[in-house]
Image 1 (spheres, helix red, strand yellow):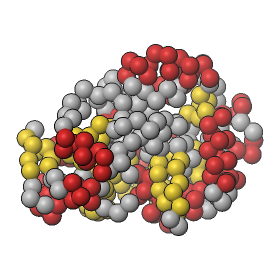
Image 2 (cartoon, rainbow, N blue to C red; image 1 turned 120 degrees about the horizontal axis):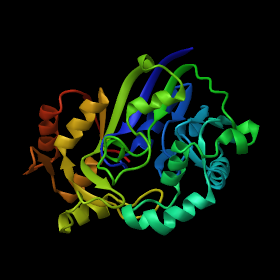
Image 3 (cartoon, rainbow, N blue to C red; image 1 turned 180 degrees about the horizontal axis):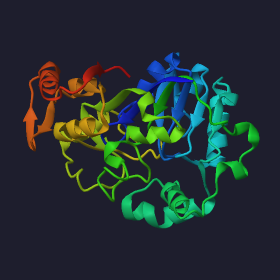
Image 4 (spheres, rainbow, N blue to C red; image 1 turned 180 degrees about the vertical axis):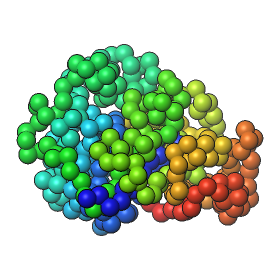
Length: 319
């Protein structure tokens, strides 16, 4: 029986550090599950000072916890086995990873179409994700239960305490995001119920954001590019985990963050990378569509605490 479910989601445009937060708390759970997206996502975290990068496999594998790829995910078979081999080489147990039989399979045709057209049109990762979801919606897709070896298929059972890892973020959500500059799956916490549990089981909804905003790919909102944001991007090593693309940087939009927190029902907010602003000695954010400047990080944190009252904020400024 499932006792409680906690859900981690990105409250911005992705790349907020969800993998880091998930890896910090994963050991407290009986299962760690991915509930959306595919290998277009990337989570980076450290285990015993060892850097680990995952794309579709949940971070639970690094802590000897069963790790489930859910039915609302899409999986490229070749990339999945390459990632599994990489994690096994790091000393982790590949038998902990299971894929929902209802997850859909990304085909070479999906990836080819994506690379030739959509990557240029809206800045996709050329991973074939959107095309796979399109075939799923058309009921012409290929599901995992028809092509994956049985030992990798999940029995669709969960119990105890479950941690759900979201990929991408609120403003990349297919429904709530900055359409059409979005991903092709549902990124909000409600999508975690696709794993097969009642929303009544959800205990904590954990939002993750940074002290400045970034995003990969095309988006007209990210129109700011000057010496200050370039400095923050350099100090923050803002490059996409999956593509290596340079991320665009803009000052934290507190209005959008508050909106995402409210709509997603978050009760905990992790704020990352304040240390980067301290190193740059630049402290700015947008509030009520105005760009505000602060003298130091403590003044900026105090302002955020005053304006964002719906959640418990955890300032997590360590790598």
